[in-house]
Image 1 (tube, rainbow, N blue to C red):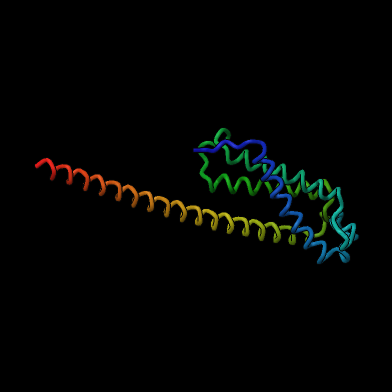
Image 2: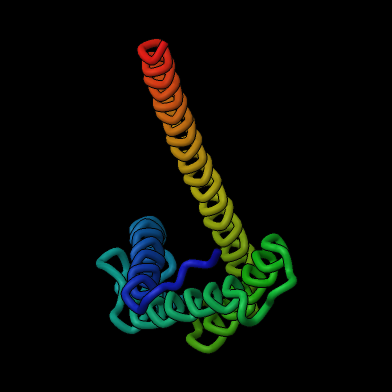
Length: 175
């Protein structure tokens, strides 16, 4: 059954994605800030930080990603497509949207192949990390559910045994 989300939950997802991308940008800026200053608006401040314009663009990208996620994982639009198909379509859509942002906001020279390779490597690394975290989270949740089910079964068995004892005791007293 699909859980209905409210605007605050979508906002929390946006901020989570934005926070993660800003963390990555901080690492990239600290590593490549001075040497890539002339190549990209990401590094316009060198190692001093990330410009407000770039942060705003990443915030907008985070909103679009959450909208894509909502679009692909709500049943009102794609009903019969399995989760794997939805995930593939969503990831491809995110790649297209990010490519549009790269071109639109001139994030790096689009005619150079090296930035595209670095972008794809970073994207795949982040996507792989996201999948790994999701799988781990699902396994932990399943383990908790299994433990809860086991505990519930034990409680039911204990209650059943107690009822049997009571019935046996009552039956013994009536003889």
